[in-house]
Every structure is written in C-alpha cells, then in structure tokens.
Length: 185
Image (cartoon, rainbow, N blue to C red):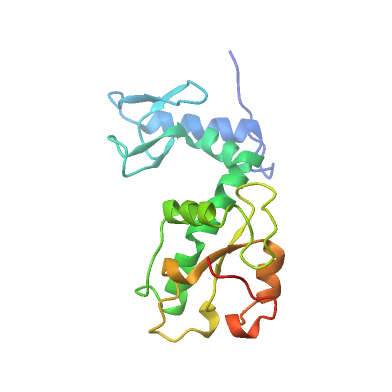
C-alpha cells in the first residue's frame, strides 16, 4: 500500500501533492462518469475538464490529450515551435483587435503558405532564402502602428514575408521610406 504524505509548507509541485490533488478530484466524481483515454500516455481518465482541456471541434468537447501530456508537449521544443508558428500567422489578429482595426482585412495560414511559394521562399526585401521554411515574419507593407481605421492593412495585397532582420530594420516605415525597398512580385 502506497501512502502519500503532504508536508505543510512544502513545494506545491511535489509528486505527493500532485497525486493527492488528482486523487481528490477522482474521489469527488460520480461513479458513472464516462472514461476517456489519453492518446499520448494511454491512461484512462474521467472525461471531464479537470483532466482534459476543452476543444469545441471534438465530438465530446474535450481534447484528445490529457492536461498533463498537453502541458508537457507545450514545454517541449516542438511545442514551443508550434506556438511560435501559430503566433506568426495569427498574431496580427490580436494586434489588430487591440488597435481597433479588426474589420480591415484578414488572411489565413493557407494564404501565407501561398505567399511563401510565390516569393519562392525568399525575403521580400533582401531576396535572401529563408533558412528553414518557417523562419520568416509576416510584414505589413503599411505598418499597423501608423494605419488609420480605413487602411486594409491585413489584406493579403499588403502583406509580404520577410526575414527577421529586414523586418526589424524596416520597423514602422512606409515602403517609400525604407531605402532597401523590395521588388514587386
């Protein structure tokens, strides 16, 4: 028989305390709660939001990985890269909403991939080839910071893919203010 001991004032992430927390949740659930198997660790848990993150597209409304496995993945290099790629593609939406520019054009991940192909995986400004396909910035040729409410800044016609160096050099300049320019596609 294994006994978990919780010491007052101990670290909140000790295995004993985590195990006690999970056991307390399981003890308070009704006995007829349906079970769901995590696709990563293959453990069965009650199909509740305490063990699985919510996911609207899923039939049962819960993610396929348990919270422990999902958090472990998010801390891994692959998880961090996935989040970084997602933020590169969808970060503009957050910034546009913050500035009150949400209704001035949108673009999807597929459109960004098409732009990447049309630029032949090269930076719009320096024409340097991207080291890896996903190390690029989505640059607004007319900067968000200087846009009025009527400019279609998030429309695909106003977006180009650049290397991080050129994007930081350009900053919030308009195309005619940026000496290194770029060529029309």
